[in-house]
Length: 169
View 1 (cartoon, one colour):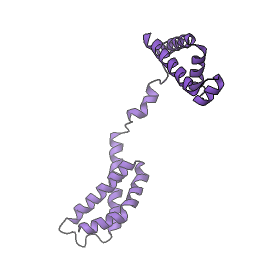
View 2 (spheres, one colour):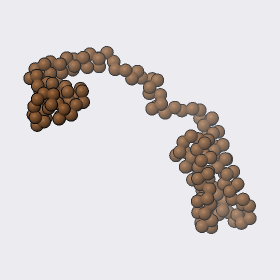
View 3 (cartoon, helix red, strand yellow):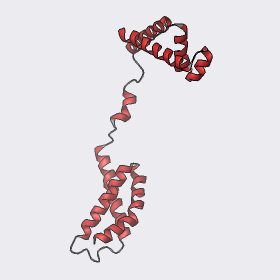
View 4 (cartoon, helix red, strand yellow):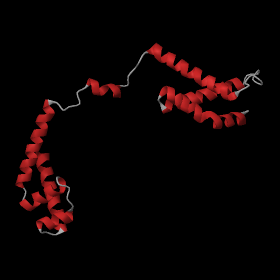
């Protein structure tokens, strides 16, 4: 008997899953429907009057799956629609930053500008070309007329300086 059930599963699980997915639009839910379908089928096979009871196993599986989906829809109607919190979060909370966040961001920006102004010109230029313009170390070295190694040192010095200034505030 398990061999017959295994063979039926291999033959029909994909089409039953697609059928359930079209109804539910949920891959996990469709898999659950298929599992429940074969579980109910196996329960019927274990009944004493099972031999000869199922003339067309495929049609019987489809009938079970259809009934499971019908029961699922009826349960949803009785319970009503329950939205997931993730789906509602955008409509309930304003995702834009608040006034306090704007003020804090402006203060951080002002501190960063001051920290950048304190840097030597080559150091500041190397950092800005790297971080804002997205240029590579070789290109920055050509622009400033310095070695690639010196570009790395300038950028690291600028980053350390800016981090210290921002952390101190």
